[in-house]
Amino acid sequence: MLDALKEEEIVNKVGGRFKLSTLIQKRLVQLNRGSRPLVDIKTEDKMEVVLQEIIEDKIYLNMSGEVKITGESTDMGDFLDLDTGDL
Image (tube, rainbow, N blue to C red):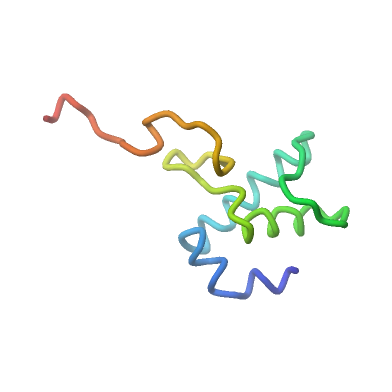
């Protein structure tokens, strides 16, 4: 499973190596604090859980750098980062 980190596909899916490492780190913190895994995988290795969640498009980083779950309701701030005073 850790070989997935060497694949450009997972790097491109997330938007680059920096975003990938940030997403992994933040999701590992969530799991260590008690969040439930979003995938059904037979392992105790949390890194493998996170990688599988990414591969299955279960999690992503929003524009604010927060981990979001796919399909979770979001506010418009995730999509637009505009100051209406500039209009």
